[in-house]
Length: 391
Image 1: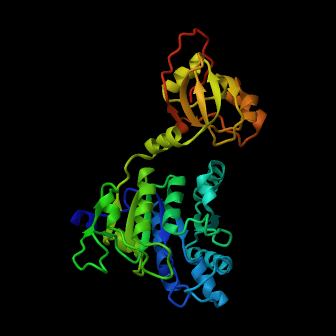
Image 2: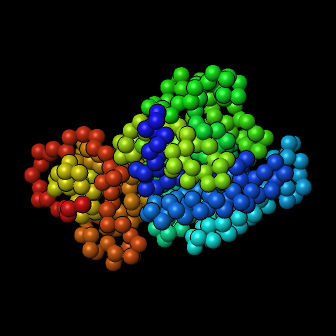
Image 3: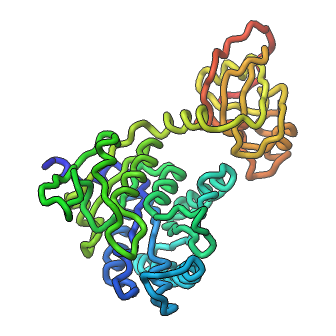
């Protein structure tokens, strides 16, 4: 435990998603805790100066909007919550922009609804936007779009949303800043004998049973949703930390060895991604390849259009397709990088001609090796000339 407390828990992570709870950002009167936010912004600037990429999932829109519109904080209708979110999102975005702008950091706001992380095409577009912002040195500020989400479709808390975002952008680490310094064997407010857990190797039913409920009227979450977020993150290969965020410089406090709970990822991101491709996605079409392309796939290379001999089905970029060998047997599945119309246009053609046909933004690979999982033997008895390029 002492080693966990003394070592910098962020040292080994480059891309970090940080979730900020409403009760940290907004006081009981519905006012922004500007001094606290300034300290957090300074912490974020320090992490970026070390070469880390930071994504923020920020609660607080409804809490700020309640105050701005003069609404009762304890009893809002769905329509009032949506109105509060609409007003609060502007104030929240401005607060983050001003706080990080003091350190020369540009922010970009992204409002997310559940379908964006659940439907593959929206997922790809959102991920691309976030990754582009990161590549440009900006800090994306993400929140659930409460102004349009209904009770039936919303995430219901930003803990789970932050886990979805972290896995979507393949973050190395998710940090949940809260009003508690980690997971205890029982809710410490109820049980004075509760013991802090510095490390959770895996989320078991016993770990889940240790979680309690929401502690503040400003938040919809609690330790239960944080553990649920941990399941989402760790199963996708992202580590998670729960730490107290009430200090003036919460990330600096964590870096200096502040008490926290680390949830270890249960698998690597690559393993979880391929398991997801195999186990949860329906096949939207097939591509048949020549022997050379089949051998290239077996060697861990990407599938290039030049090795494709036949395409069936109508699919869009991001759909799952099956890859067939010359005998028609499935040898792989993957997330396709082109829609079926463009794939047919470049089928059998070399990579250097794809830009001429599809434009500068086109992808050279039909399926990138990171999005491909082998499902069967790539051997073939057919003797055909190999037409493939290294991927």
